[in-house]
Length: 80
Image (cartoon, rainbow, N blue to C red; front, side, top):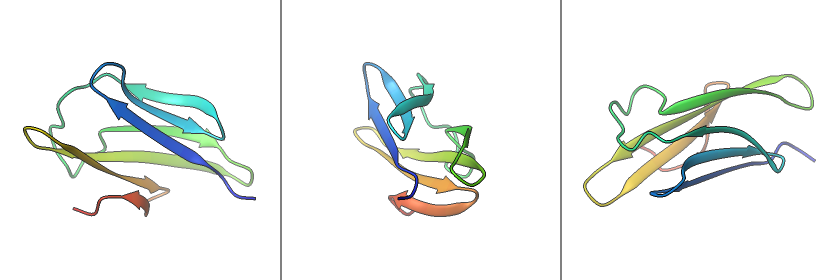
């Protein structure tokens, strides 16, 4: 079985990153300033090696889109 990540974002508690059920990172930043730089990132110890998890965001007036990269590879989310 591989690694499992959850990313949850809402207006009240911000963005939270879970790895295998454990909270490993969070951000209360409300505005994405640059979609080409990580909104937030965290390094976690995986089953085989360290994993750099980067969350990139893109926001408009009423929506927030994001995608997740692990060690530089796109793994989930919206492509922009």
